[in-house]
Length: 442
Image (cartoon, rainbow, N blue to C red; front, side, top):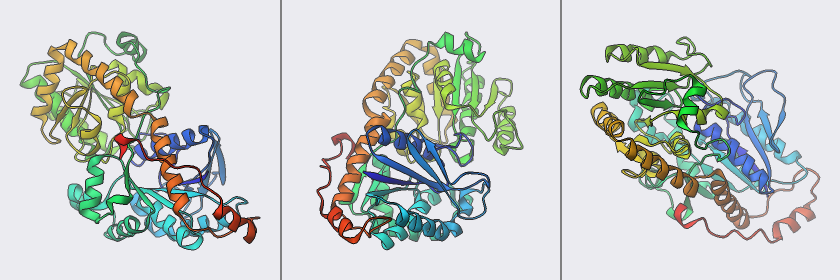
């Protein structure tokens, strides 16, 4: 198949860890790579956010197309909605010029979906949508701190109604689509996010700590990901403070992420707030901000930690718990969204309430006092990650969904050098057998 992955704000070429660079970037990059390895032709469309970017860049066999929409500079994703008409107009003209038509579009996030709906209306290209976060759910949790306009809700309603298939990343995402968007359950498929087994694998803990210059004999807690408030990193800092003050248990917390390689409060203002909280909780000396790190180094951080902790307020899926499990590290996660799905409570780690540092501290102390339990949980997490959450398995499931959407769609408008007769012949040609999604991902 010829597949268009649309990801307006999250480029697969970006370094993860910044405010607007995280799970979606990783998702799109890995899905594109896997689809290419499976023999598909893949183009990724993302907004041009720097003036000197070329129109097209090759990435592991896929083309990344930098769409001129809005000023060619980095902008918060909350400011991009006014440029989606321009984004859509570019897509329509680009699609029309291609010698071979696209079999399917996969829109990632609601703004990509808005542009894709316009393409579908103009050219008839089938549409699969993954929201990655739902506006109404976000508003429930963030309230007035949600920077997106109310117009997002109506756009998402249209996408739910007019996408050929909608991908939910976990059972909670599926339930939210039904409850808040009146989605047709027959057009929803559950396909999770994943990890790259070449990138994430266990490293012997002592060797990992030596590679990072970390002490070998301390109980180490790791928080890794985007440094934004909804990720609940303040709860992790407070939990380590309770562990010290109430349980009289020493621990060291490393926080990896930010908008720069060196921890910089100007580049990443959240660091300043978290440092103040660490000081307030009496763990300023035990808390280290590492800065942003490249993905090839992250397995050392996961492997060096005694436990990985992530306690966001809400999380549509959450890739970092799966990555930690893939490195055989136990996970303590918030009992929300996708984390409730990926972390098997009591088996691969523990689930705790998202705003409860005392509950977090109790679980940290349990793992600190029982290294054998932590080791068993880490091994169980590794087995679960490899069985359930590889990017190859995710992409296999997505490819079957694309084939379903393409097989059921009407004939597309001829594009590029294709004649009307050739287009009609192509529309009538048999599609690849679609098959169903894996039973565990329905």
